[in-house]
Image 1 (cartoon, rainbow, N blue to C red):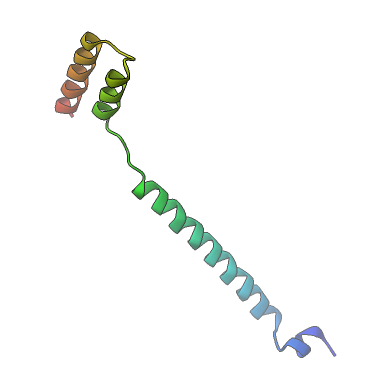
Image 2: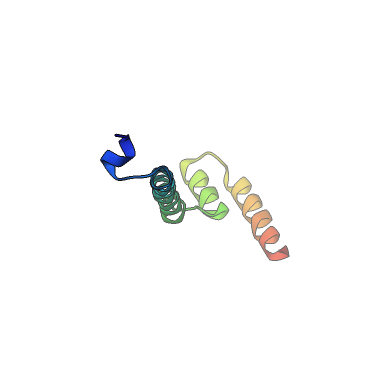
Length: 77
């Protein structure tokens, strides 16, 4: 008596089952990755600049200069 006779499964069914399980695993991984990229807050360059200014990492003059460059660059595109 062969194993496939005991289990009632033929080789084709085992291959299909393995492929199906792999698709489920990859699907779950893709959904998790999608949720991580869509739910994370992507800060704009202005927000990052404001935080750096608030922390005292850059001076007011640097802040104004960088902010002007960013807004000009956005207006060009």
